[in-house]
Length: 39
Image 1 (cartoon, rainbow, N blue to C red):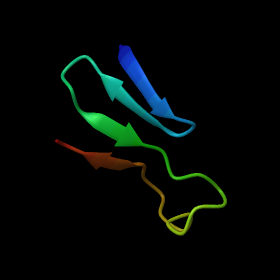
Image 2 (tube, rainbow, N blue to C red):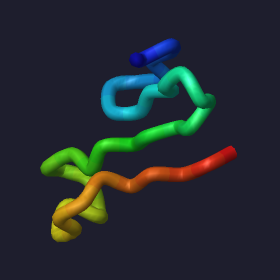
Image 3 (cartoon, helix red, strand yellow):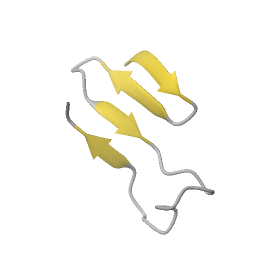
């Protein structure tokens, strides 16, 4: 469940994990998996 959208490709889910999706024009576009960070 998304609880907060941070910007176009980042959002927070219910457990407060922030997920950033690697967009096609991002430096990390070569990565297969989204970048998931715990804050």
